[in-house]
Length: 100
Image (cartoon, rainbow, N blue to C red):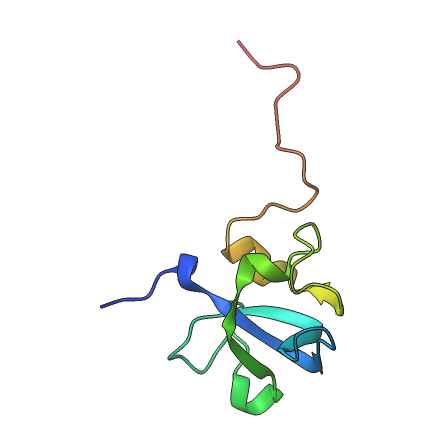
């Protein structure tokens, strides 16, 4: 059974423990990661880059606009975000003067 991008978890450069509930959450730079693989969606090898795995945290929870587990996230990898379907800039592209 192949895993899909919708099941992506998180790999991060750091970790911290939430004092309220004692759960380990990502910090620093976050990447999308499919559990069972040894690389992020942008192609970084987890073993070589020493990224920490967070299989219990889904990718949407670390987005800054979600609030969830994004308290200590400093940077979201733009290549992983694009692989997960998020466009940069937040505004969809439209043609203002179409050709006939």
